[in-house]
Amino acid sequence: MSKQVKIFDTTLRDGEQALAASLNQKEKLQIALMLERLGVDIIEAGFPVSSPGDFESVRLIAREIKNATVCGLSRALEKDIDACGQSLSVAEQFRIHTFIATSDIHVDTKLKKSQDEVVEMAVKAIKHARKYTNDVEFSCEDAGRTHIDYLCRMVESAINAGATTVNIPDTVGYTTPTEFGGIIKNLFNRVPNIDKATISVHCHNDLGLAVANSLAAVEQGARQVECTVNGIGERAGNCSLEEIAMILQTRYGLLGLDTNIKSQEISKASKLVSNLCNMPVQSNKAIVGANAFSHSSGIHQDGVLKGQNTYEIMTPESVGINKNNLNLTSRSGRHVIKHRLGELGYQQDEYNLDAIYESFLKLADKKGQVFDYDLEALLFFDQQKHDHAHYKLEHLQAQSGRNIIPSATVQLSVGGESKTESAIGNGPVDAAYNAIMRVLEGHTIDIVDFKLDSKGEGADALAQVSVVAEYNGRRFNGIGLATDIVESGVRALIFVLNNTHLADQIDEQKQQVKVSGV
View (cartoon, one colour):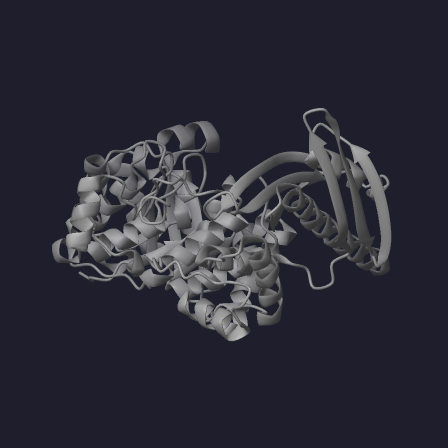
């Protein structure tokens, strides 16, 4: 049996389903390219039939990714499979992933079909997918609650129909490791043609057992694990990519299994997904949490100083966390910034050095010292800027205090024209938002969520505001970064406004095409 475990990442499909606002195409491509650098074997880029936007995002990713297999999800329906085949056709290598439910509760209640009919649908779907590619994956949805006799029958039928990978999902996170590992063991013992396909697992974290269940399955012969960066996903999330990858690496002596994951890229991937998806990583999260390599106990600190492996089973450097908090000041030149970003793992073609340096100098003047985490935050924010933004912040002034009514004056460039408005509010951020709404003149935006996060340490840390807003029935996510909370909040809203403006332009273009077509 192979000693290589394939990593199938579904951050852009299952992970995105858990977000308050969908990612745009640029953000999805950023994550896909990061996953490629991370060494992911298969990237599930989306569910092409679900919307025109998802179709185009999958197509864009399929065109750009060269070193990983790009995958699209489909139900066991011809129209879904056709959408996958069409969106993925530009890829150098791609996979169609089709699925149907197999548990009694799903077959009887949701599908309202017999077991024979469900097997027939699965076989038909797999054969149709094979018209587009030889790389076809089939999933038995809710396999964890499927009777083992029927599951064996379905797996055998799927492989006979041409599935090269068969996925066994614990869709609702119901099983325990012993139970789930037993399911995989039973399949290997009872399905006669199981050696002709890779057995995959897709575990959810409803009971906090997604990683443990995935590991139990791997120990019983599964050779593909479906997971997400930071474990994001439906409900309580999915198996965490960084955790399963580092388990296999750290315990290689026990398990003897490899992956293609470049572990030094893990921290960077985690930060990118956390920022773009507006989902902070809890401090005590394994591998990538802020406390993962921190030691507070005096006994622990003494032990680590005497020997790092006394309390650390892996080094922070092994997952890309650089413990060298190099202090940078306004006297630091461009070369130093370029060198430091290089040491942090960023290639020069990933950022605009002049733009980063300009932002760095402004921050250094305010803070005095700039640290690695500041540079990474500036880099992330620079990547989110619109080169030709319709809305730009020109001036901001806000006042608040114990005996002062909060007020704000905001000057925006709107399509090149400066507009200024003032307003009061419940606080300085609310006042600034009210002023911006006056500038918009009827451009109705509803703020659904507002989150403030500290990027760095101490009182002079950068403030990152994440905003989710609703516009024309759709949700948009915006991020702002500044040393001032009010400015950060305003920049987050402007980020949203530029996304809504872009969406309006796309809708207008589609309407023009539709009219001209008629």
